[in-house]
Image (tube, rainbow, N blue to C red; front, side, top):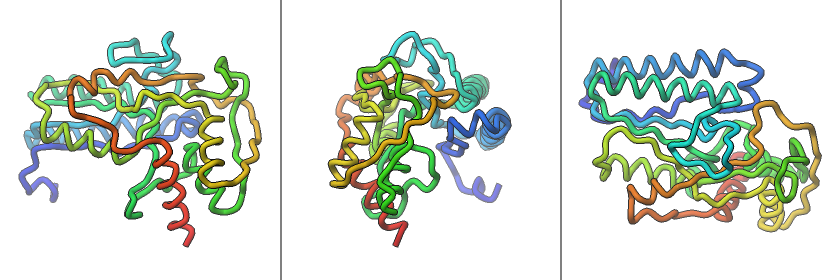
Length: 262
């Protein structure tokens, strides 16, 4: 309420529990808490007549799609509580914003990686591949757990799509400054899929360290392979080009972890 004494035109809703594995252990956090957060923020958006609502969703809403490369119009079949919770939030936002004349933009993030080059912000919570690798290497634990080695992929490991946090931030900036279209959903990724084993190999090359792989069984809610069709993103912002790539994201992740450790 104190915040809304200022004249605010946009809400960027980033708040969420985001761990797929945790969502299977503690479904309440993902099916109730995440949804409740969104309901509360929407109430304020409606009460204070916000013009624009930008929501961070996830590739997990696609779930076990019949397609490996997914676009915004593909069927949504989330297989994790995290993905299901985000889909419920998407539907809430669509309904409430349409009923209250609020323009919405839903951004479906694929795996967000990297850190701020000035070490002001970076990943804190364990769970993601990039975070786990960076932290282990910084602590001289030159190994990593890989969950599943018999996926139907070229090297047997899961395939994912990535985008640097700087490019995610830039997409938000472009939406606020330039986007005229109303009520849209956008995939946010580089559309350059990498397997888990390929990412480990890149970390090994960049850090110049041999990394031992410990295989465990597949985790519940894990999608074998998925990456984004980002044609719509490029169509909306014709001048958009990634400012970063996965190699740079690995370097900033390692740099961030060194900063945290010191």
